[in-house]
Length: 591
Image 1 (cartoon, rainbow, N blue to C red):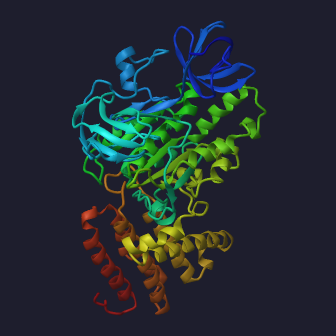
Image 2 (image 1 turned 30 degrees about the vertical axis):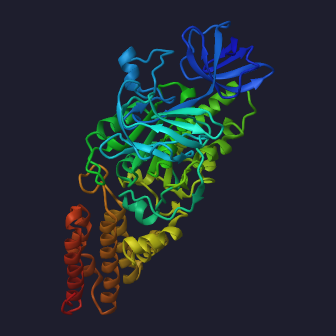
Image 3 (image 1 turned 30 degrees about the horizontal axis):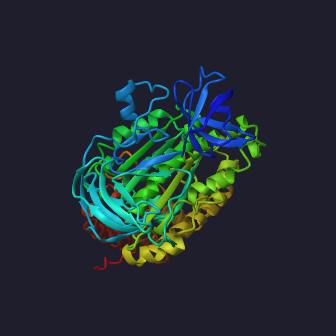
């Protein structure tokens, strides 16, 4: 056990001497209160330690003791439905121990040591096992079957495996390793947060992460195993977008990291998730959610650790073969924690005071996402999708955190303050956003939604881009200076913007749109536009076409319940054709 003494205290940074035999990233205990810290720099026997708790009152000469182990998380049954702080201490457990105000130096195990879990083995004594093999399972919640895996670097034969109720520390199996030694396996394993969990192979993302948000799923989809950024100024709806994705994305596990945002936003999540019913499982959303809370009033240094804690937990569920969605809100606050620690270490600052290694740190976080084949004889395919909110000061995405993020991610949902002020939500700007997964996902949309869907998407984007050009002409000569075909194009774009892309996150039905509903809505709008063009060519009046009541009915289509979509779509499609045909004196055609 390495011990040293504090010689300098600078906010969350503590420098200790006599730590020459300690290792980088070792967890240490500082002072009489046993404050938790981590060694982040070693120089001439001096250890620079970032302390994850308030250091007020800490004096020079205080004893620093190394634990000899890096910052690690406990992985096992009990993670789901639990809310942790940035270094995986359960907030509820700390509240029971110390009350509403977190006491410094408090130590609470991440997983409940007393609760018993029913373990059902999948193997038998004598079976050969290796890292990643599934020993058995625990039904953690009504919707999550927790797979108990053989830990990394363990290979051999099972000497025994038990069935029954166990705590996370009880031995459930004994493995005789290749060197003849025996190792006891429990329901729990540990993993250092700064190292990605290993896998056999990384696969190309080929399936979309369906979110139920029309502007995302239709125009700028993200793949399962993909990475996305949501930058935007204050008040543009970043947090609501993150909440919507956490609620409705078709991931089997959600890991939500509140790294530096306001505490009341985490309170909203905590209040809403237990009440919301998951459309995929019929259970509450908390039954498949893990939360990491390190809000703006909590220690700065722990904010830096919180994203690694969250993504390590997400990787663990990915290794079980689950599709996992990770939300980080917001990575700008995480980067500010990096900047503060870098400044206190007196490192050479980069652009805007951020450390020179900002880009590599952002990359190392996002690159832990992906669709992979897990370790083990029968490798499972799991996916980890990472979505990070970015809060650039003043909404200026040319600042370093936004730029470092955009160099890594493949989906960019650009939130626009002008759209937010116009009460258009989600305020994702369709002209500035992009998704580099579209070409790869078109085949899936064509097979699982409708063969027309990729074509409709391309037409809608083209119309919206042409609308921006036409609006410049309108500002010069007025709308009367446009041809009737161009005026119809503007009307169709208005329908796409106001009826389709606008979505009310707080409406009971409109908060979520299935892909079937998205296709139906887009098809109706495009039918109105294309049949309207034909009607104009046959002599119909533009004024009458634009005033057709069926336009309002198309706009209200999003409020139909999912079970009524197919029937209403067929009726509405006929109604559009009839209404436009009547304008040109033609009789409605039977469909």
